[in-house]
Amino acid sequence: MENFYRSAPREIAELEARIADLRIAERELEALDAAPALWLKPKAKAKRKPTTDDESKAPRTVGAAIAEVLSRSGALRWPSSPSR
Image (cartoon, rainbow, N blue to C red; front, side, top):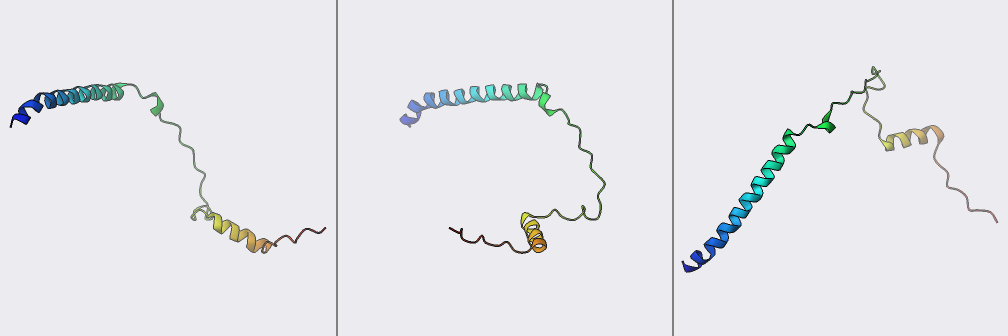
């Protein structure tokens, strides 16, 4: 019990310091909320083109694009060894 009485003032001081820090943080947050948000101005939305049947499909993946090119032009050939 004696240890409690010895450490109580120190713990009280630490808690009071935390409370003060929290009050400062609260004031800063309130100031940020009240400040005009210049960077939050709404931007003009990009107008979308009307979709056609081809555009309404899911976007192609890189692998699908590579497969399409290879099917059109044939498989890639490995370069032959350089002639000397």
